[in-house]
Amino acid sequence: MIDSIPRCTRICCKTRRPIKPGELFYSMLVADKGQYKRLDYSAEAWQEPKVGDEAVGWWESKISLQGDRKIKLAPNDILLNLFDELLDEPEKANILYVLTLLMIRRRIFRYEREGEEPESDHLLVYALRRETTYTIPVVAMTEEEMNEVQEYLASLLYSIG
Image (cartoon, rainbow, N blue to C red; front, side):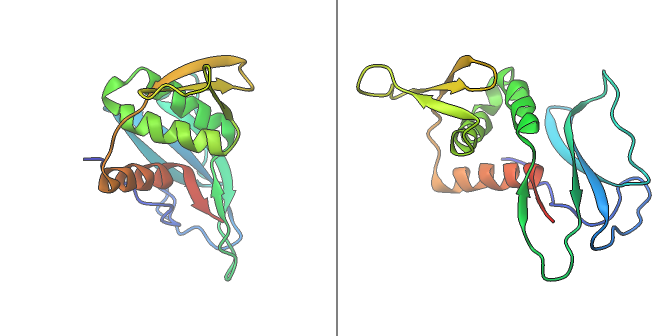
């Protein structure tokens, strides 16, 4: 079962001060004991992670003004960093598979076919920026498991702002 990670709480994790509408904030994705967590910081409390920190990546966002509810996905570099981390974690193949599908949809990856039919047990994808091909195992999941993984990734990678 994947732990549920809340979306932005609109409260700085360092100062505990509410982040106001229209205010700039930073989100950081960190690896902690085999789990990924999202931390949100107000602009004044933010310090860019140093090399060697547990940060997978970070991005800047803005708390939406009233009535502005646009949903934003983390930048492509963050998706690629998370993808790289998950490649080394076979026990999280279900998350890697769903993230790969998201990245195909975002055109970060291109779905490759070998011959006329795709392989049934693997996705072959080409990373346009990296000029690299990856073979990703297809993970059979129930609808409930798929929804759980999608919610997990959404909590890590999406923000409303």
